[in-house]
Image (tube, rainbow, N blue to C red):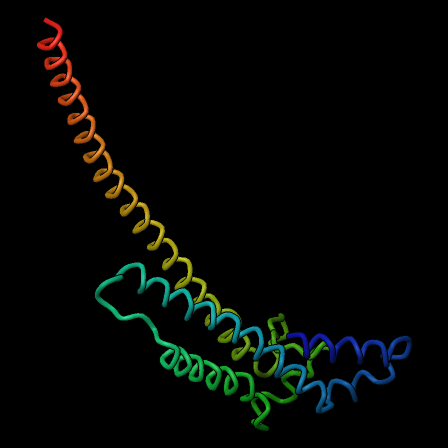
Amino acid sequence: MGAYLMIIAVVDAYYRGNYILHDRSWRESVLCKIAGFLSTFSSELSVFTLTVITLDRLICIIFPLHVRRLKLKDALFVMSIIWLAVVLLAAIPLFGIDYFGNFYGRSGVCLAFHITNSKPRGWEYSVAVFLVLNFLSFLIIFFSYLRMFFVAKQTRRAVRNVQDKKDRYVANLLVKNTILMKIKYERVVF
C-alpha cells in the first residue's frame, strides 16, 4: 500500500496544476495499472492474512490439545497460497480481457472499486472482490472471535469453579485446624 500511495503522491505532484491535460494519458498508463494492481493486491492480502491468522487462533483456542499448531513450514505454505491467489486476483484485470477494458484506469487514483450507477465493464468483478469476498472474510473473522470469546468465558467460569472449590477446601482445613488447635490449647491449659 505504501508503494501505491507513493506512486499516487508522485503523480499528483508531477501533474499538479495541469492534471486535466494529462488525465486520459495517466489513466491509460502502465504506471496507473501497476498502482491499481498494488492497491488491490495490498488490500486483499491484508484481509486474507487477517482471516488466516484468525482461523489459526480459533483452532488453537477451540482445540488446544487435539490439533497441532501451525509450524513455520505450514504457515509459509498457507501464506504462499494466499499470496499466489491474491496476485492472480489483482492481475486478472491486466490480462487484456475485453470484459475489463481499462479496469484500473477508470478513476484518477487507479482504484478497482467501480460501484456506480453507470455499471462500467468489470463492475461485477469489483462487487465480487471488494464486497462479497471481503464481507465473507469479515463474517469469518467476526464469528471466529465471537466463538473465541464464549470459549474464553466458559474456561474462565470453569477455572473459577475449580478455584472456588479449592478455596473452600483450604478454608475448611483452616477451620478444622483452628478448632483442633483450640482443643489442644484448652487441654494444655486445663
